Image 1 (tube, chains in turn brown, purple, red, yellow):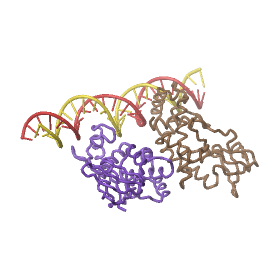
Image 2: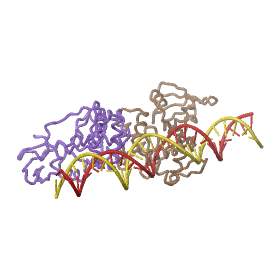
Image 3: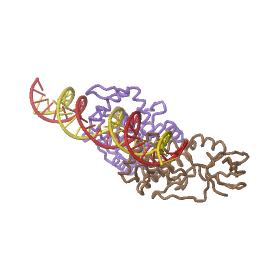
Image 4: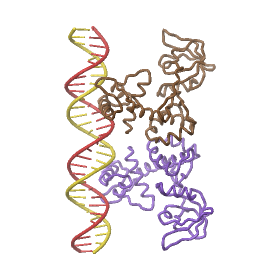
Length: 218
Length: 218
DNA sequence: TAAAAAATTTAAGCATACTTAAAAATTAAT
DNA sequence: ATTAATTTTTAAGTATGCTTAAATTTTTTA
């Protein structure tokens, strides 16, 4: 399994799991920084390997086999993020960038060592679930997007669903961090904005942020 | 810099530094598990990039630029070995195998974090020197091959110059470990064998081992 | 030192993973 | 419901890093 294939499968997985769910070659291509033609090519190859289902002009779908591969890579990615975050002075963006590279060169054996050292964590520092060795995921169905939160309620940050450095910088600066507590002051539904307070700070977030910050009710 | 190029340069470096010093394409090819033809091809490419000097039928030589690249990769390799050995329950062979992969996907930034965490070690668990960020190496000219050691003298293991699992297994089983103390009982010069004692044990080693185990006089 | 053996190089070819450009199909808009 | 715009696919081509086989050069040895 080449790095190109691993990244391709992971991209399908991430699109599938996240809200958007556009897994056509063009969208995958955009995310991987390759041409649509290259993505179509790859889709055919992966279909031949039984990793995805491919029909012309349709969405790409992981097979059960493809899903297991994807979960294995995602597991390594999130274990590395958890490990680097714990060991070193690195930001959420830093750990993501390094994990993107290391994940492809990590044996199952090493992944098991890292997982064991960390006490087999179920979530990474973004709040994303870490699949176990069998590809099983602990889901927290209770988490909701901040955009859907109730006014006057306290919440705990459950997930920061992004890879974007600016977003992480903003979060770090404002105390928006996995497991921190916030209070929802007001929902400006017409403008898709949400006012929250963290400690002594009050912040108004737009929908770019409130849709990727997930929270649990306290 | 591709993985193929990094491994090629590293192979030249290792041959150059170690005793053998055969850096012709065929020998590099054998070590990398590729054909001689592929190695000749690669040699031409690296010469065009000014990383090595190449003349038909001659030994390959790293340029100053090539040497810096090699030292950077060797640094990452040995930092990973040191780090994995400290953090996890892994043998010398295990850490080598994992480091061979991770070294190519490690940013200078991450290498600096690992080095800092370890207190900027100068030697890895094999006793091999770890180049610093500028490619500088702390050499210990005092170390000698066990084959050259004096009878009746105590020594400290300074270096285990090998990548071989069987060798490492043997060492682990017999307490031959970086920084451990041994006593040289007898040199059987005619047969190129050396008898040593470690703790309560006595072992006779042949030249396959006594030439790659380096020691410092106590 | 001349023939035999071994190693290196050249040449031709292949798989992977991309590219651009044109053709075909789908989706959106009027 | 057509037309226009967008997207996807096909086709042709490229760079990398390999392969095998044959030609060439070096090294060994007798």
